[in-house]
Length: 392
Image (cartoon, rainbow, N blue to C red; front, side, top):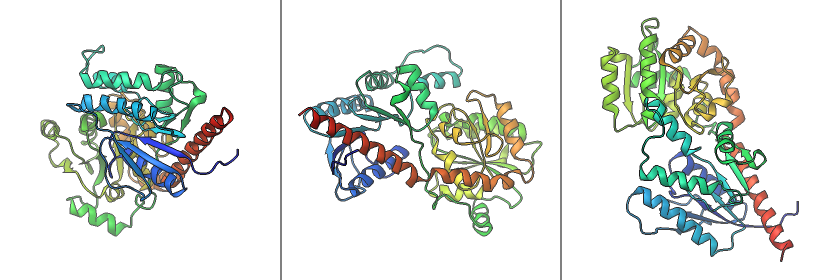
């Protein structure tokens, strides 16, 4: 392939921020492209500090009331802006439908809706709110034939879903898993682990099972609590540690109280030290019903901590069941989850698996996965410019 020098790219995402999984990928990709000499413009509705001084921003703030209409307005504004510009490539990170390359950051919204209803014990599609209806329409437009050149997914879970729901051909899909910072998320010395455990009231002999994440319902905390209640009697050293934020936390605390679990379940709230939290615990549980990837799964593995997860997390594809933890169906019962947890509470098993778990995570370092994504974008952009030049 002939190198054509710097290209002009736009990256579209409604929210440019310094925190958040998709936002981090946005910042890293933009920075790396700018460092390679490309002209990069970020299209967003609101922005934070740029990850590189050479980045440009276009704020698209079409008048809209409420989050649903803001989402819709942004998708429309991106379409209008791109139509009037000459970009070599437009890279979208979800919730818009005008792009050359689209990354299905959150997976399929239709699947998310269906599984949410099933997790709540509801049947059928039910009545959809305005935001869900608009999100589904944006998604439908995003994957129409001719609307994209490449589709990037962070798991086969999402890629298979896009083929089934929207007819995206397999040859147009690139699987690029999310990466993990291997320097930040790493096994810690015993002294460091012990200090963290003591700071939250854990004893050295406790077997700490960590649930970490915001949005307790989607990530399956209710099922984790019910499963823990079933194994607590047979494993008196086990403690469930909950780290994260949820506006409905009181409901989960009441569930713990009703199950008479007392101090066996600890709610620590949001913390600024997720890496230390993982490294100080013995096992991570992630019983989500749908997560296109699930950063915490890979972060735990990078810390040498086995994971018990559902196949509703795309990152579960990176695990070997029985070697790096356990993988159960996304709709598994609390009893089946309890059995999986119990098998990893056996003395010494988690410690014995730690090295293999860390080794697997090392294949998915953030630098490696971001380099793959940047290379893909450069390839599509130069192909686009070549095609335009040939037709001139």
